[in-house]
Length: 184
Image 1 (cartoon, rainbow, N blue to C red):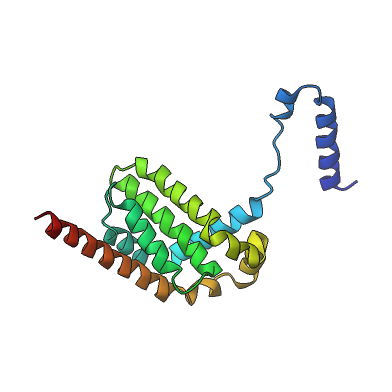
Image 2 (cartoon, rainbow, N blue to C red):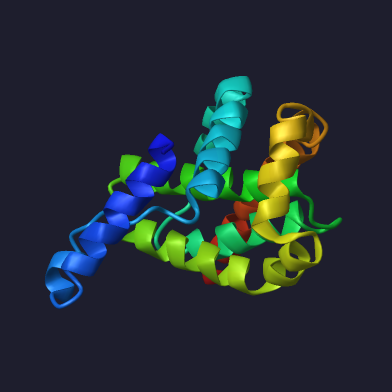
């Protein structure tokens, strides 16, 4: 008997022995059905971070957001990021941007923003991006595509993504200056 089927048999035997006790069953580690996706998203994000670490650091400093402006800045960058359409590289950039905002929030001692950013990202994933993801094979297609094309997926998108961050920072500065003069 192969090790995999032996492990499966042992797991099934343990489950049948504990069927009367759900509390015990809940303690048995369950396989993560999304493990491949989590791994690939981590690898893709790490790849972008490795290739463009200096650029990401500069862009994160250009965001200049506060608790009052964070959601507007987030929305402005995301709108610009997907203005010309959706692709997997931009979706990974979306995750990197959200992560960058979370790190910047922590660095600025605005820890409450981390949960907000996660909520905005979830809302955007379940809203505007959901149809595109499903129409393009779902997350399984991303896992397969990433396995075949890894770095080439991001090289072509990076100049565009860098421009998006720059435009968002410029727009954020314009909004801040406009708000300042409106109050005067």
